[in-house]
Length: 354
Length: 251
Ligand code: HEM
Image (cartoon, rainbow over all chains, first blue to last red; front, top):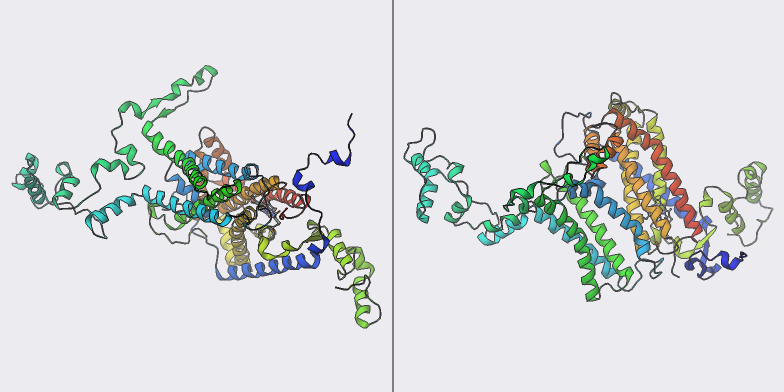
């Protein structure tokens, strides 16, 4: 039998509580009035602030709800627009459920990763705290912004701007049948007989000055003929994330692999599960996003370790947490102000999120 | 602050003071006299159920505004304000898809201060999401999640989720286009989870699309379910702050 003494009864309590210096009375203030008054003033100030705001700005009320009319764009409340933004870049299950769940669990686990007591109770008091905050925040902010711009194929625009030396990169407009045939001849290519008929006036519907029909037309040939340098066709799959799926000739079998057949749920009286895997979609919607979301922070941490920017656990925590907040902010801002009709990437300033 | 424990008798002011704060009525309500001596100031805090959330003395660095920016306190303050304005809004609101939108319109036009109440509720709700997130950032950057406060951080994360859910459930109630489609987009996200997503969405919305069943579910969660749960977690949160020895400070 063990007797409970004041000593061992304290055993389970963390060292941090037991080991703290006894309080020096002269270091302390009375809660009344020193704190209660501050709280009171804070409360009054905020009441006034909210009153003024509420008198000046009315809460939004649109038309009565109508399930038959889907507004374009339809947006979630602002604090979820970051998730809605993710939805545009990856599988909905990832963006809508798995990412937020993992993020919250990771957030809750912070104290269990970093349980040292350094830097406790004071603003950013460890040696490299500010450095790590800025590195994490800037990398998170601009890294995410670049990824968003990449998925909106802005890099293609920039390439064409530089290649053509113009600030308004626009592929030349589609030519007439006549012009296009001339371009083909200049290249030394044969003019297809259908196109020849149009030019000779043998086509009952189209004439030589009409726009060339799409079955004869190749954008890249016309670009070349009119001296326009477009994004190389061989790199078409790098225009957006989807390009990997759409612009690579994936073999037919890879588009629907019936994994569901492997799970014999019917043996247990449940219906068969429909689970057909499309490898290209799997890569684009799941493997790449997951690799990026885990890999990029890990890469950042590794670089920070190597360069000595982050040395302690607290350093890494500050960097990752700041990065997380920055990513949350940029995704929310883009989702709120830069997703317009059809959720295209463009400025959008209707205050419909009040 | 008087240095001796009892105010001196004699002047008119003192006699008025005694009449006001030393009588039986005052004493029956507040166990201490007016808090003008250190003893009474500590008693005022320790014997009052609301002020008792605080310790009687705190470290001088924690009184500095820049240590907490009052953000946790403000989150709590907004929660209280939302409760008060929310109760007032409930007087005029019926959670039925026939009436809800009409009720909000009537609230804005026919009810005195109705628009103001609605505005305050709305802005405080947005404000609370912001203050809670900023409070979390202040706790993080002051390293206040470190032992022994790990678990209070976890409770904080739960409070963050509850705050978002409170705001989200409230979003549907005006039953306008904004409400309907924001909730449709939001709940569709839940529905996209593998295997359990669709059943979960069905339970949340009470059907295949956002309609009467969803409205009554969101309403019930918004006005009673979630506030109760949040209040309980806040109690634990505040209790833990006291138990963990007040706010964190350098060891
Ligand atoms: C409804 C939401 C919340 C309310 C009403 C609330 C309230 C408070 C209050 C009043 C304090 C006292 C100090 C201060 O004002 O900063 C506090 C401290 C604390 N809060 Fe919260 N909080 C909330 C959410 C959170 C969240 C989201 C987290 C973290 C994820 C968190 C973690 C903490 C911790 C660890 C402390 C102790 C800080 C220290 O020792 O310096 N709380 N909270």
